[in-house]
Amino acid sequence: MLLSLHIKDFAIIDELELALGAGLNVMTGETGAGKTIIVEALKLVMGGRASLDIIRAGSERASATAIFDSRNFTKEVKEILDSAGIECGEECIVHRAIGAQGKGRISINGVPVTAAILKTVAEHLVDISSQHEHQLLLDESMHPHILDSFGALVTLSDVFRDVHRRYSLAARELSELEANERAAKERLDFLKFQLNEINAANLKPNEDAEIEAERSRVKHAVLLQEKTFGAESILAGDEGVAAALNRASQLLEHCAQYEPKVRQWREGLDRARIEAGDVARELALYAEGLDSDPARLEELEERLHRVRALARKHGGSIESCLKRRDELAAEVDKVANYDDLLDGKKAEVAALLSERRAVAEKQSAARKKAAKTMGEGVANELSELGMKKTQFAIVVEMRPEEEWDESGPDRVEFLISPNPGEPMRELSRIASGGELSRVMLAIKGALAAGDGIAGTSIFDEVDSGIGGAVAAAVGKKLKRLSAARQVVCITHLPQVAAFADRHLRISKRTKSGRTVTEIDELPSDARVAEIARMLGGEKVTAAAMEHAEEMLAGAGKGT
Picture 1 (cartoon, rainbow, N blue to C red):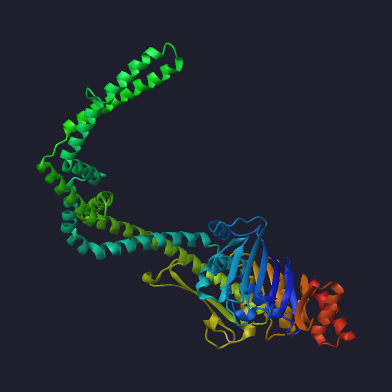
Picture 2: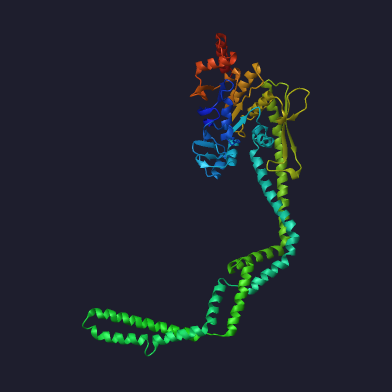
């Protein structure tokens, strides 16, 4: 349910707060007061197309904020919000702002969202009906969903949607396998060649770095041997560092008995002598192990060239080359077993096709049954709305199998013949605004017990082209509809306004030299005066006041 709508700097509205309640909310006012602008603001915040023309002259941006009671949100809405990372407590706040430079901001409970997410959420929250905009009920792609909601077939439709998705994915995979079969088998020899080339090299991780290090040792073996033997001689020879450190330690040994801290220095010299000896031994072993064999150097050069060539060919490193080896092995295995893979996918597609057909038959039969009941219900609703001779039918025809989609196997179409002798035609082709409004109202009346359409229904000039007893019937129908969902109706007919649970009057006045729109909730006595104005014009007579009181009293009894 829509709790409130805050509008700022929108067309002639500087700032306005619209508070709504459960049941039937009616908005009335003079032509040009801004009633339609309020609906346009609601369309904007519900994901409608934005135009810079809506920004109030002299303002930097226009904004609209809608607050919904989220305690009774459907499972679908909660899943959409949850997937977008939006937490929802008792209220859901939808905000949209349009800047003069064309930049906009959209958020739900403070979380920025895309226009696509907003529109998806909005479809489940608000349904706006007007003479010039076909939303939800007149969108033919929505007809299957509306029928499913009426017939309690949503779960069955979910089953079909699931199997259809699985079938479509498997069929697409099969098509790709069949299209690639010949090319894949022709590539088998090439794949094997590449795989064998990498396997034959017997690569090891980081092998190039290890080869480079050994190559450097072999290439400079003579130099390394000469220098390391020389360093070993300096450290360990008879006149080397180790001998010098030993003599110095012996000299300090005699001093230690007279000066305690000399012992620390002697111990340090001993440690240095031991370390020098260890280094000298390691140098000797290293020098003895050096080999300047030209054959080994050539072998290393060839190996390094081969490793680097393979690395360049397959990603630039040994690691990428080894990864490519694994990929090639998997692809070779796949192609080698292509026939088995193809047969398995064909069997999967056949099984899913059979499953989809079984669900489709069940779904289509259930829809045809529900279509008959719903068609009769809408026709009855239309009869009560002054369209007694109107024929209404819902056609359910199973489409060719290749045309099935997630909505099901059927083409579901709402057909109507407003006048006797006229052929049945698509609902979206109705010419009369008055007829169109009443058909939409009749469909919603038939769906009142379901949950397939939005929780808030907005009717903008739903009573266009009607009057008298038909207008009263429309008012009564709106009142009954509001028992199941919140209804907001903009009307110029007193017969409709009389049924309101909450009556809001839209007016305009001049403020600081500019026109502004205001809205007031009318108490009982003010309602009488407003309905009297709607009956007789600006000059309210005693007779009009009396008629208004009678109309309000009659509306109360009529519900």
